[in-house]
Image (cartoon, rainbow, N blue to C red; front, top):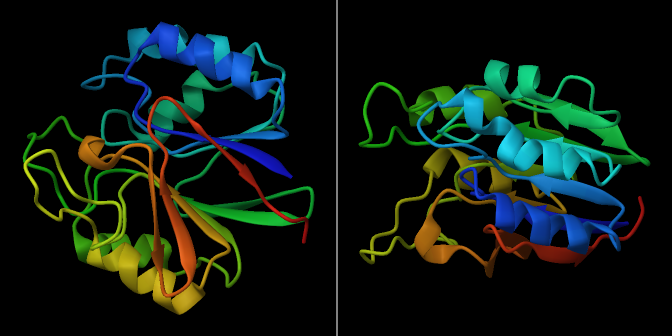
Length: 204
């Protein structure tokens, strides 16, 4: 299965159009959150309508700029689109598990859709072994270096990766590491970014 991984579009329609072109060669779109800015749901069409127009199925998680309910509402009528937050979906025999939001809590204020590490641990508790893990925030210490040089990933996500040993981790959130790939205990971790990353995943 060929996956097109992306994150952090932030209502950037030209970036979505470029992803849509790349989607022609993909089997599944995997979006790791932040489709809009600051919970401005009026901007969802800037990206989601373009991506929906590809006719491709998708697995999406909310970022800290939109809630799970807001993203779910925005994706109604998109055949084959799965919005995951503390939940799993199976696509062509491959299990995807998703958790969105900023983990740990961001400094951005009450508008940001955030969870502390304890809440993150609870949301990740049901992730099955060997899944593809789609999270907005990266695991602590891997593809999580901010533009200021700090490691700002999640310990809850890191612990879940070590416990579950997913086939792949897809994340975003930390723009300073967008477009980079790392590894945690042999598990590839991709901070996808708005330009997107194509990933070949062997069928289960």
